[in-house]
Image 1 (tube, helix red, strand yellow):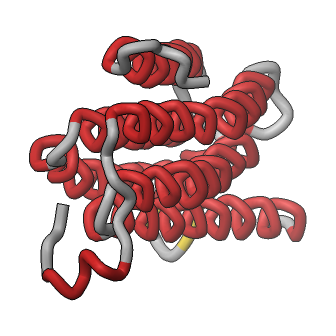
Image 2 (spheres, chains in turn orange, red; image 1 turned 30 degrees about the vertical axis):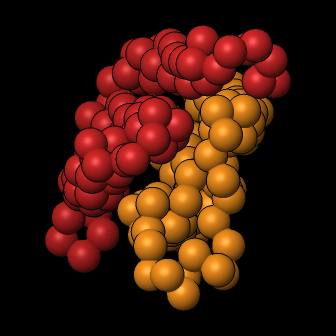
Image 3 (cartoon, rainbow over the protein chains, first blue to last red; image 1 turned 180 degrees about the vertical axis):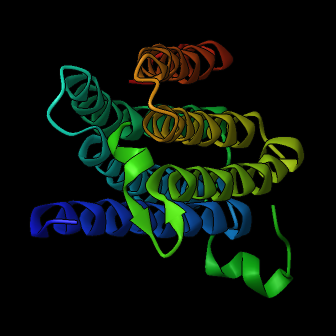
Length: 112
Length: 101
């Protein structure tokens, strides 16, 4: 293995594992957070970052090929659409009349 | 022989390692399915399905790289487009006036 290949493989593994970590954070948030607004927050930020890192790992794995352009398109597209979708969902929830979770809800011990 | 088959890290080829990482992504997706089933409101479920869709796109891309089948990326692109359309459409049509963006 040449030096350049070693750097490439190390980058692939590092990016893929970082993406896995941020997706883990996002999954924990989606499952554990108290209301739909907090979940929309973690879904738009942590998940976008995790997907971005994992797709960068895929781009480095494929190398200089025409198909790598598709990976970059995918990365750009997910960075653009994922927060937009989460915003639309949170706004729909607000217009439905779902009250945001506050600290007062914690005293009652109620979880929605 | 392709790059993912010839490169060996700690006894495993790079393709096998990427498949293992994709498997961990699948495990996280199964965990997030809890929110899609249990979510008290419609928006919770849509959000969970949206996150699951993003996860699916990542899994497809990882498998496409690991198995050296780049046409998986085309399917991932279409899936990402449909996923975004699904979230926006459901948010728009579950609300009375429908001005969500």
